[in-house]
Amino acid sequence: MITLLVILGIVVVLIAMAVGYKNKFVVLDNSVKNAWSQIDVQLENRFNLIPNFVETVKGYAKHEKETFDGIARARSNFKNATTPEAKMEANNQLSGFLGRLFAVSEAYPELKANTSFENLQNQLVELENKIRFARQFYNDTVTEYNQNIQMFPASIFAGIFNYRLAELFKADDIARVTPQVRF
Image 1 (cartoon, rainbow, N blue to C red):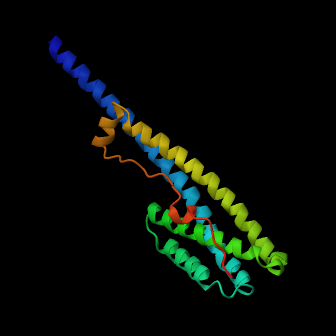
Image 2 (image 1 turned 90 degrees about the vertical axis):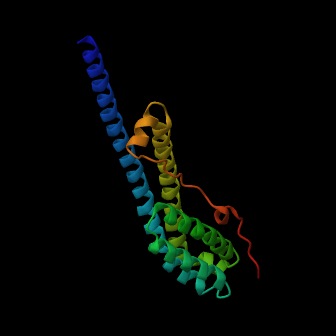
Image 3 (image 1 turned 90 degrees about the horizontal axis):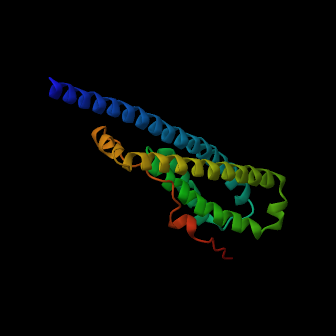
């Protein structure tokens, strides 16, 4: 009888642990999804602002076709992306081309004096700051999630419930390259 009570006690404890960990994983997973949606909203705003910015610059820097085409490709890739990873990649591509575009604008004083350009540039800078903050929050949330599903004994339950590591938002090689302006 005591053996049966001990076994029953162990089963109850394991079930309670499983329920506790499952609930914790759900909360953490939802936090990661929420953090990603904050980035997604800001990236969408950024990608929607880009065509106006590009059109303003095109009038002054007609020879920057490669940059304009790259921005259009990155925007298209973002619109067609179905996963956070694909959207991160499109964002990184756009960041590289925007860096070039900002560098090009430095060579055109009359463009920098254009109020439409200045307004669009200020909006982009503000969005970039929001995106940076959202990325930091997302990476902090993902780190907490990943740590929780990797630590013992939570890792056992994470495997049972099929929770996998989430990917951090990282800059890629394009975003790390310093833009070069050639005339």
